[in-house]
Image 1 (cartoon, one colour):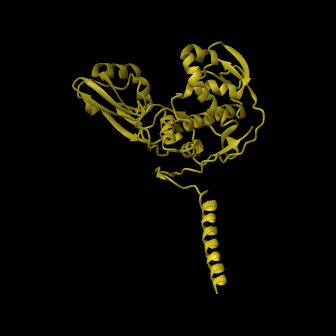
Image 2: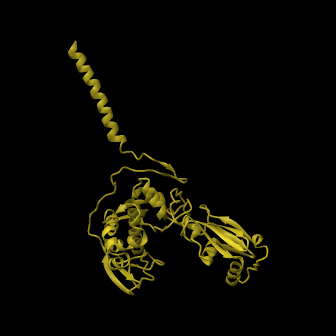
Image 3: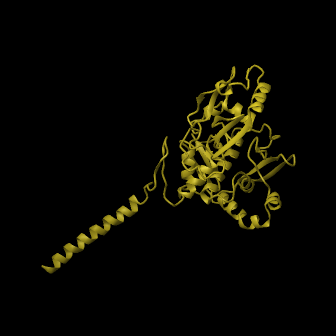
Length: 341
């Protein structure tokens, strides 16, 4: 009798251990833990292991029009990205945010190449003018401007973010996307079509819940009523704006999904929020207008155009232990990450 009982107990223990093992192997891989409601979709942390393939081919050479030297240079794309990432995002940011930025920057170059967008580059694939493409600093410029200590302590962090994502780009329908990005949102990104004239299925408004730490999350710009009126009358001759009873001559007519001013009535003229942002040098088009005695006060949220990936939002997600691919898949709707070399 003892032997059958022992055998039965052994079988039960084995069954329990097998169930535990199966749970660990299968359920441990699920995309769970720390989901947060992101408004239009959920941000979900994935497994720690980078799930994307490693093609491990030689990285391509690209032609770069250096706007500061007025010359076209041939360089390895990954080496160029060291300089782009150094210029576009602070090295103080978390590793995963830097990786996300590196992938976005790489995708931007590939997008330009695939679409033959050489205008303004003098025939090169890309340029170093941040108003046209992406900012860039050479190694020597970084050494001169940031100093030896930065090169020793921070440059390796930049290189690692680029190297760890080598060849990774963002795609939609098997093609590189236009990966727009900006500094700081007001808690939600913009639909591309509400800011620019073009519509892209992957540049949709999403919640961006970790923005408050940005130094430009909330700012105020003050200007006298007289300068405010003069600036508008000078820019728009038919606006018919006067200092008297100014509060009743301004009315926000429409806002975007993310809260930016889309259309505003000022005097006899309907203007866009972008018009006002440009004219008065505001950090974004997400603003309210108030008055303090003889002063006009712009209360502004966010910094930048608001479309695509928020850099400070990416940093906030990284601090919450989200991976770079979580960040990218959140800010760019419906995209895939592909390793092309």
